[in-house]
Length: 213
Image 1: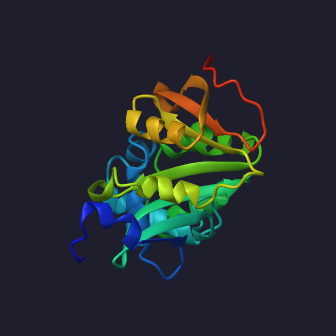
Image 2: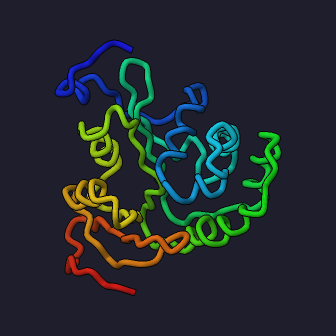
Protein backbone atom coordinates (compact mmCIF):
# COMPACT_ATOMS: atom_id res chain seq x y z
CA UNK A 1 0.00 0.00 0.00
CA UNK A 2 1.25 3.46 -0.89
CA UNK A 3 2.25 5.72 1.98
CA UNK A 4 -0.43 8.36 2.60
CA UNK A 5 0.02 11.26 4.98
CA UNK A 6 -2.35 11.49 7.93
CA UNK A 7 -4.19 14.58 6.64
CA UNK A 8 -4.77 12.97 3.24
CA UNK A 9 -6.50 9.81 4.45
CA UNK A 10 -10.07 11.02 3.97
CA UNK A 11 -9.32 12.62 0.60
CA UNK A 12 -7.96 9.26 -0.61
CA UNK A 13 -10.70 7.12 0.90
CA UNK A 14 -13.81 5.88 -0.89
CA UNK A 15 -16.93 5.15 1.17
CA UNK A 16 -19.17 2.64 -0.57
CA UNK A 17 -21.31 -0.46 -0.24
CA UNK A 18 -19.49 -3.76 0.20
CA UNK A 19 -19.52 -6.12 -2.78
CA UNK A 20 -19.48 -9.91 -2.67
CA UNK A 21 -16.33 -9.66 -4.81
CA UNK A 22 -14.43 -7.60 -2.22
CA UNK A 23 -11.88 -8.95 0.27
CA UNK A 24 -14.42 -10.48 2.64
CA UNK A 25 -11.74 -11.91 4.92
CA UNK A 26 -10.53 -8.37 5.61
CA UNK A 27 -14.08 -7.38 6.50
CA UNK A 28 -14.48 -10.45 8.72
CA UNK A 29 -11.28 -9.46 10.51
CA UNK A 30 -12.67 -5.98 11.15
CA UNK A 31 -15.97 -7.39 12.44
CA UNK A 32 -14.02 -9.55 14.89
CA UNK A 33 -12.13 -6.46 16.09
CA UNK A 34 -15.29 -4.39 16.50
CA UNK A 35 -16.15 -5.94 19.88
CA UNK A 36 -13.69 -7.12 22.52
CA UNK A 37 -16.20 -9.40 24.22
CA UNK A 38 -18.72 -11.09 21.92
CA UNK A 39 -16.50 -12.41 19.13
CA UNK A 40 -13.46 -13.39 21.21
CA UNK A 41 -15.87 -15.27 23.48
CA UNK A 42 -17.77 -16.97 20.65
CA UNK A 43 -14.65 -18.03 18.76
CA UNK A 44 -12.38 -18.61 21.78
CA UNK A 45 -10.00 -15.89 20.56
CA UNK A 46 -9.26 -17.87 17.40
CA UNK A 47 -9.19 -15.25 14.64
CA UNK A 48 -8.71 -17.70 11.70
CA UNK A 49 -11.77 -19.64 12.86
CA UNK A 50 -13.78 -16.45 13.26
CA UNK A 51 -12.79 -15.26 9.79
CA UNK A 52 -14.11 -18.43 8.14
CA UNK A 53 -17.48 -18.26 9.90
CA UNK A 54 -17.89 -14.51 9.49
CA UNK A 55 -17.16 -14.68 5.76
CA UNK A 56 -20.03 -17.16 5.47
CA UNK A 57 -22.22 -14.81 7.51
CA UNK A 58 -21.35 -11.99 5.10
CA UNK A 59 -22.46 -14.17 2.18
CA UNK A 60 -25.41 -15.71 4.00
CA UNK A 61 -28.89 -14.67 5.09
CA UNK A 62 -27.78 -12.93 8.29
CA UNK A 63 -27.50 -9.43 9.73
CA UNK A 64 -23.89 -9.53 8.53
CA UNK A 65 -24.88 -9.94 4.88
CA UNK A 66 -22.76 -7.77 2.58
CA UNK A 67 -25.84 -5.77 1.54
CA UNK A 68 -25.92 -4.35 5.11
CA UNK A 69 -22.24 -3.38 5.10
CA UNK A 70 -20.48 -0.20 4.01
CA UNK A 71 -16.72 0.01 3.79
CA UNK A 72 -13.98 2.59 3.60
CA UNK A 73 -11.39 1.78 0.94
CA UNK A 74 -7.99 3.45 0.70
CA UNK A 75 -5.50 2.46 -2.03
CA UNK A 76 -7.52 -0.70 -2.74
CA UNK A 77 -7.39 -1.76 0.94
CA UNK A 78 -10.52 -2.03 3.09
CA UNK A 79 -9.59 0.00 6.16
CA UNK A 80 -12.97 0.21 7.91
CA UNK A 81 -16.44 -1.27 7.83
CA UNK A 82 -19.89 -0.62 9.31
CA UNK A 83 -22.95 -2.86 9.55
CA UNK A 84 -26.33 -1.14 9.70
CA UNK A 85 -29.85 -2.43 9.14
CA UNK A 86 -33.22 -0.79 8.93
CA UNK A 87 -35.59 -2.23 11.54
CA UNK A 88 -37.17 -4.76 11.79
CA UNK A 89 -34.23 -7.11 12.18
CA UNK A 90 -35.27 -10.73 11.68
CA UNK A 91 -32.74 -13.37 12.69
CA UNK A 92 -32.85 -16.97 11.53
CA UNK A 93 -31.19 -19.32 14.01
CA UNK A 94 -30.69 -22.01 11.37
CA UNK A 95 -29.12 -19.58 8.89
CA UNK A 96 -26.49 -18.57 11.43
CA UNK A 97 -25.78 -22.18 12.36
CA UNK A 98 -25.42 -23.00 8.66
CA UNK A 99 -22.53 -20.51 8.47
CA UNK A 100 -20.60 -22.64 10.94
CA UNK A 101 -21.39 -25.78 8.93
CA UNK A 102 -20.25 -24.19 5.66
CA UNK A 103 -17.03 -23.08 7.35
CA UNK A 104 -16.48 -26.61 8.76
CA UNK A 105 -16.33 -25.11 12.25
CA UNK A 106 -17.97 -26.85 15.24
CA UNK A 107 -20.71 -24.70 16.74
CA UNK A 108 -19.54 -25.20 20.31
CA UNK A 109 -21.38 -24.67 23.58
CA UNK A 110 -20.93 -20.88 23.60
CA UNK A 111 -23.14 -20.24 20.59
CA UNK A 112 -26.40 -20.55 22.54
CA UNK A 113 -25.33 -17.87 25.02
CA UNK A 114 -24.28 -15.45 22.26
CA UNK A 115 -27.43 -16.11 20.26
CA UNK A 116 -29.81 -15.66 23.21
CA UNK A 117 -28.03 -12.76 24.91
CA UNK A 118 -26.95 -10.81 21.82
CA UNK A 119 -28.25 -11.87 18.41
CA UNK A 120 -31.85 -12.60 19.43
CA UNK A 121 -32.21 -9.33 21.33
CA UNK A 122 -31.60 -7.38 18.12
CA UNK A 123 -35.11 -8.29 16.99
CA UNK A 124 -36.42 -5.89 19.65
CA UNK A 125 -34.62 -2.84 18.25
CA UNK A 126 -36.83 0.27 17.92
CA UNK A 127 -37.21 2.13 14.60
CA UNK A 128 -35.52 3.23 12.37
CA UNK A 129 -31.89 2.14 11.78
CA UNK A 130 -29.68 -0.01 13.99
CA UNK A 131 -25.91 0.32 13.67
CA UNK A 132 -24.57 -3.07 14.69
CA UNK A 133 -20.82 -2.83 14.13
CA UNK A 134 -18.28 -0.16 13.31
CA UNK A 135 -14.57 -0.94 13.08
CA UNK A 136 -11.54 0.90 11.72
CA UNK A 137 -8.17 -0.70 11.11
CA UNK A 138 -5.92 0.29 14.01
CA UNK A 139 -3.45 1.92 11.60
CA UNK A 140 -6.13 4.37 10.46
CA UNK A 141 -7.92 5.25 13.69
CA UNK A 142 -8.29 8.85 14.75
CA UNK A 143 -8.31 10.11 11.17
CA UNK A 144 -12.01 10.65 10.59
CA UNK A 145 -12.71 7.38 8.80
CA UNK A 146 -15.30 6.09 11.30
CA UNK A 147 -17.12 9.40 11.26
CA UNK A 148 -17.18 9.41 7.46
CA UNK A 149 -18.75 5.95 7.42
CA UNK A 150 -21.46 7.01 9.85
CA UNK A 151 -22.20 10.25 8.02
CA UNK A 152 -22.61 8.33 4.77
CA UNK A 153 -25.89 6.81 6.03
CA UNK A 154 -27.34 9.74 8.00
CA UNK A 155 -30.53 11.47 6.88
CA UNK A 156 -32.94 13.86 8.56
CA UNK A 157 -35.91 11.48 8.53
CA UNK A 158 -34.47 8.48 10.36
CA UNK A 159 -33.51 7.78 13.97
CA UNK A 160 -30.28 5.84 14.44
CA UNK A 161 -29.50 3.53 17.37
CA UNK A 162 -26.30 1.88 18.53
CA UNK A 163 -24.66 0.40 21.60
CA UNK A 164 -21.13 1.03 22.81
CA UNK A 165 -18.99 -0.18 25.69
CA UNK A 166 -18.93 2.56 28.32
CA UNK A 167 -15.16 2.36 28.71
CA UNK A 168 -14.61 2.97 24.98
CA UNK A 169 -14.21 6.71 25.50
CA UNK A 170 -13.00 7.44 21.97
CA UNK A 171 -16.05 5.84 20.40
CA UNK A 172 -18.45 7.50 22.85
CA UNK A 173 -16.83 10.86 22.11
CA UNK A 174 -17.17 10.32 18.35
CA UNK A 175 -20.84 9.39 18.61
CA UNK A 176 -21.60 12.42 20.76
CA UNK A 177 -19.80 14.66 18.26
CA UNK A 178 -22.02 13.28 15.50
CA UNK A 179 -25.21 13.99 17.41
CA UNK A 180 -25.86 10.79 19.37
CA UNK A 181 -27.12 11.11 22.93
CA UNK A 182 -26.95 8.55 25.73
CA UNK A 183 -30.33 6.94 26.41
CA UNK A 184 -29.29 4.60 29.18
CA UNK A 185 -26.52 2.59 30.75
CA UNK A 186 -27.00 -1.16 30.99
CA UNK A 187 -25.02 -4.38 31.63
CA UNK A 188 -24.09 -5.68 28.20
CA UNK A 189 -22.87 -9.09 27.14
CA UNK A 190 -21.04 -10.75 30.07
CA UNK A 191 -22.20 -7.77 32.19
CA UNK A 192 -19.81 -5.26 30.60
CA UNK A 193 -21.18 -1.72 31.25
CA UNK A 194 -22.54 -0.28 28.00
CA UNK A 195 -24.39 2.77 26.73
CA UNK A 196 -27.34 2.75 24.37
CA UNK A 197 -27.13 5.86 22.21
CA UNK A 198 -29.54 7.45 19.76
CA UNK A 199 -29.26 10.03 17.02
CA UNK A 200 -32.75 11.46 16.71
CA UNK A 201 -34.29 12.46 13.44
CA UNK A 202 -34.42 16.17 12.68
CA UNK A 203 -36.96 17.96 14.85
CA UNK A 204 -37.42 15.09 17.31
CA UNK A 205 -37.07 16.32 20.86
CA UNK A 206 -34.56 14.62 23.13
CA UNK A 207 -33.43 15.49 26.61
CA UNK A 208 -29.82 14.30 26.38
CA UNK A 209 -30.15 12.85 29.87
CA UNK A 210 -28.64 9.56 30.97
CA UNK A 211 -31.15 7.04 32.29
CA UNK A 212 -29.67 4.17 34.27
CA UNK A 213 -31.49 0.85 34.27
